[in-house]
Image 1 (cartoon, helix red, strand yellow):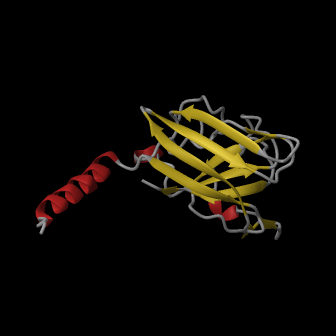
Image 2: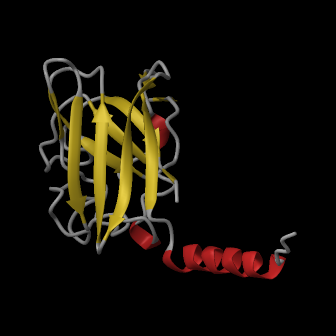
Length: 182
């Protein structure tokens, strides 16, 4: 007959929880939904050294370049614009801007110059599917620049990386709320 002690298991669990609290999550994910509420892809965010690896896969979009942004609110609900029209995924709010710049800029700009949520674009092929895979230091998984509890939005048009507030990137076509997974 084997006897096990609860103490080693409790100590291991305590150490694991303390490690998560101290170092934070190492991965986050968002399921990308279209305006009809159907899942059409996903975005993952993984800690990689001092950077964050972002991987996005999506389907059902028009071929070409599409802007991608981190938005401030963890909501992919529709809102009503000032003209009374429905704004798909308007509940996501504006671009994530922890530096308080109020300036749309290139994904390589410092967070003191432009929105931290200004990401590289995703290229969509003739079959309507697109992928993106890049490293960024603008956002991470903890602290003031954490993407957890925010949303990722893919827009209808390319990003010009200069026009405020959203790079002249058109309608919001995909949205996903970002949650920690580990």
